[in-house]
Image (cartoon, rainbow, N blue to C red; front, side, top):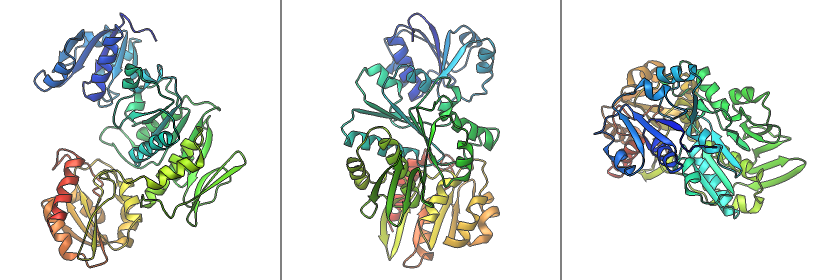
Amino acid sequence: MELKNKHILVVGMARTGVSVARFLAGRGARVSATDMHDETALAGVVAELEGLDIRWTLGRHDEADFLGSDLIVVSPGVPMDHPLLAKAATSGIEIVSEIELASRLITAPLVAITGTNGKTTTTTLIGEIFKGNGFTTYVGGNIGDPLIELVESGQPAERVVAEISSFQLEWISSFRPQVAALLNLSEDHLDRYASYQEYIDAKLRIFENQTGNDYAVVNRDDALVWKSAQGLKARLIPFSRKQELEEGIFHRDGVITFRHNGHEENFPTDAIRLQGVHNLENIMAALACTLLLGCSPEASIAVARDFESLHHRMEFVRKFKGVGYYEDSKATNVGSVEKALESFDNITLIAGGKDKGGSYAPLVALVQERVRHLILIGEAADRMQLELGSLTDTHRAATLEEAVWLASKITASGGTVLMSPACSSFDMFKDYEERAQRFITAVKGL
């Protein structure tokens, strides 16, 4: 891909934009960078890129920057319907995402993982399995380092693993993973997309450029995923924890079985450290992705057995007076909370935060069946009370600390206190990590 002397505009100067601008400037492109945040807010970014030939437009966007470019690279945080992007597209200017740019320059086999929930755990586990099999591996995308940093570094990689968000898929044209996985679909980011279907369509673009030589690893138990996967050009490799499969990977009676091209491998699950039904699905998806790309069954299950939960994803905090306390701050949508509730009984659920626009109706049956007490916090509390409050014993708390204290008073020994919010954290906290830490501190202070 010829970049030298091309006029390239980078839109959005968060982590991805910084990496893209640095890479392009290093390749001799004529780089312009624009962001709605001003010079004061982005002083650290400007300092980080000091010495590179980059022209800055900060605190605003100029139409001339967009229409005078040979190529525009859009950061994930910039919505696809931005009017200046629409004008540029109408003018015939090529617009790409960072993953599209990077994928044109990456030669190693690429595994890409998307879905509403479980992406980070699955992506990280796939990377560890590849490394455990002796492959030089780069893990990035929506977690850790942008893919373009692999290209910039020039470091060798025999396998590339990328977590991919719907935002990153909005501006692809030739992005083609050898193995693409869709873990699940549930309502999310409806503050960004006009409809649930628009969000689903963005996710499905991960398969768009695959051929019959590639693989699509999909959740057989998710009716929407399975329906959406019909008609894909790639070879379907389903995973299921509910039914036996002739081709694919499934769980039955404590054993994961992988069947492909007439061969069968069996993996007992009794020693696996990751707990929860959602993690069983993540493990099956990870094993499928890696076994399809040359990993040995023995080395792969050995890594999966010892892999432990990532922070803020159903993380055990402590046992206090016979009650287990679990922190699931990364559960920022309803689908993620469904998986959490399926993993316990006799639950005191702490939920709420900044509402993301989706329906809470998918939680109704699980709340009725498994949640003994519901404690609501944050901006979404009124709406959650309206949709779920009549289903169980429901309380309100002004702060997360008050919610933890209240949970400790009303939860009987043998029960579980689960903080699984179904909402983003931005009404009360800087991010989900701060929310998690506040919960952990409150629980340890009981």
